[in-house]
Length: 428
Image (tube, rainbow, N blue to C red; front, side):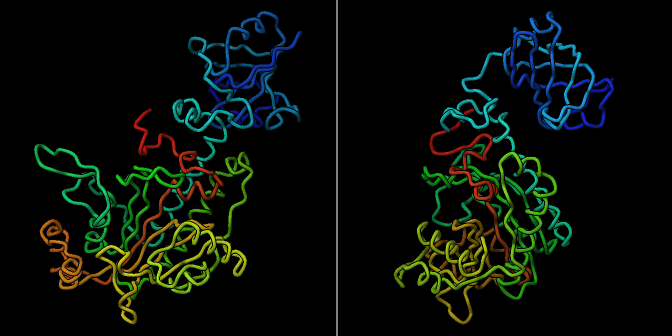
């Protein structure tokens, strides 16, 4: 008899079944015991009436791994309306040492640091696991949306010879006696690959050594990167981003419906055209000084409230950021050279995506680096490619953990990250 998952029990009512999983919860009553088994698909209720089997169950603490064979019967009060009766419960390992928190409770009551210290077991809790399932579905949707549009998935180095974002801190390491760095993004490589495939994307880790210790920052996170060639300007990039977001949310609805139910979530809609405001207008809406060079978190929150009130949208584009606040490879706005053909996408009042049109002429790169007092040599391998013909292009990057945190309403991005790496945490 093959093992089935808890979600498949309703297809075997009246027949013999074999399930396996973790002892999620035991209720030991006088004449009967109820065992809740947790597996990858959910929960299954097992009814134990045999005195010997009940006694054996007492020796199996929560989180012990067991196999159960028995008969599936309908019971509207059981999970999924089915339970297992007349069971034989067989341990598949020694009795578990109970974790420092109860995984059977509806919510984890342990503090976030305690959860992170014991992440391998804390992640078993249905709410923590649900967030990771949503993350996986979102990545699947990201890939599917881009594959459908002729993009090619690439894989770029995570050890590089120079920093990507000039001015940002990097993690330095020794590369066989030579200085090297963990990649802050695949930016340079994905631009170069536009010269090969025209449309590319990557899903991979990026590393930022900026000493942020906030609820929205991680030192390592998963970046969903896109770059596309032969664009007119940044607005074509924004249109692709809109479609990608819609695909990600559609995949979450299709592949992670149970996880959404566990967390009590309703997915936001993506407007056919996401509202957009220029940076100068955004400052006015947020009540910020007109000479402010960037948007502070409070400004982003105010803009999120405005987008919801004025457009009924959880998403808002802010375009035309000052060139001084954009990387050197950003294309300036031809009509307003002090501003860029770059954008941020705010999701519920939080910056989620940065993107824009890039420079594509070799001479423009030399001028941009000179204007910032940057030497060409560290970027020579990157800049040289533009001597050999590159089309107008642009792209964007989505921070996966930040997207999932905003989607689920998590107060801290670490709540939706399996094993976060930040200013203080290198383990587990």
